Image (cartoon, rainbow, N blue to C red; front, side):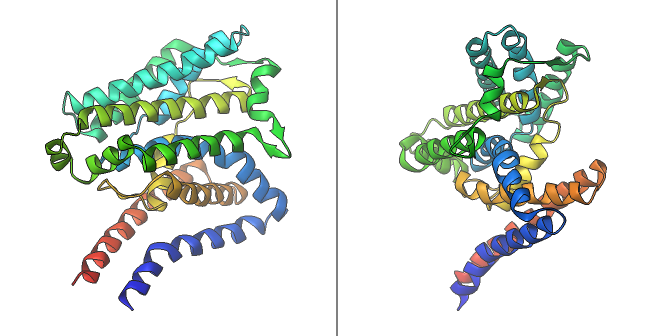
Amino acid sequence: MKRIAGFALNYYKVILLFAILIVSSSVTQDPVQNIKNMIMIQAPFVMIYSFGMTLAVITGGLDLSLGSIAAFSTCAAAFLIIEDQIFVGIAVCLLIGAGLGLLNGLLITKAKVNPFIATYGMDWVIRGAVYIMMGGAMIYHFSHDFKVIADGSFLGISNLVYIAFAILAILMFVFQKTVFGRNVYSTGANIKVSRLTGVNTDMVIIIVYMISGVLASTSGLLYVARLDCAEAFLGKNFGLQALAATLIGGTSLKGGKGGVGNTVIGVLIMVFLMNCLNVLKVSTLWQDAVFGLVIVVSALLEMAKQRYANYLQL
C-alpha cells in the first residue's frame, strides 16, 4: 500500500496538473489549434534550453545564464547571418555558447564558486556585454534560407519539433547508455565518492555546462529565425522557466536524479501555464511571480517526496 501511494505521489500529480492545464488553456480558444500551436511552436524552444538546465541540476548545480548566453551568441552570429553567411554564423553561435558554458564550468570546478553565484554573475556579465555590443539596435530581415529552419515543416509537423526531439533522443542516449552519462549522475549523487572511483568530476561538470551553453545558443538561434529579429533582450526569462520546467519534471535539486525525458512533461506544463496567463491577459510582472511560485511549490513537493521515500524505507 505504501508503494502504491508513493507511485501516486511521484507521478499522478504531474499527470493531473497536465490535464488541468490542457482543459483550462482550451476553453478560451479553439482547442485543437491552441494545443497544436503550443506543442508545435512554443514547446520546442522551451524544451531545448530546459534540457541544459536539467543537466546542470543533475550534477548538483544549476545554470542561470541560459538567457544571456542565448542573447549574446545569437546577436554575435546575426552579424554574419544577415550577410548570408548562414553556416558560419550558426557555427560561431554554437562555439560561443560552448565557450561561455566552459567559463561557467571553470568557475564552478577550478575557482570553486557556488553554481548559483557563478552562473548568476555570468548572466549579468554576459547580458551587459550584449547590451554594449548591440547598442540598443536590432538585426532583422534575415534570408528565407535561415528563417525556414524554424518556420518550415515536414509532413505537417514543424521543423522545431523535429529539432527538439532529435536533441532529446541524442541526450537520452548519451546520458542513459554511455559511461559519460553514468558519470554525470554519479557526480551529482555523490561527488566525493565519484572522485574516489576515478571519475574526473571536474571535467564532467565542465562538459555539462558546455552542453548547456550550446543548447541555450541553439534555442536562441531558433527564436531569431522564428521572430526574424536578433536583439539584446532575448531570453530574459529562460533561466526561470527552465528551472521551473526541470523541477516540475521531477529532477531533484540535490542532484543525481531525474533526466531530460522528465523535463519534457515539465516543459509542456509550463507552456500550457504560460498560454493560460497570456490568454487571461495577466501582466508579465505577475507571470514572473507565478513562475517563482511554481519553483517554490515544486521544491516543496520534492522535499515531501524525499521524506516519503525515507518513510517507505522504515
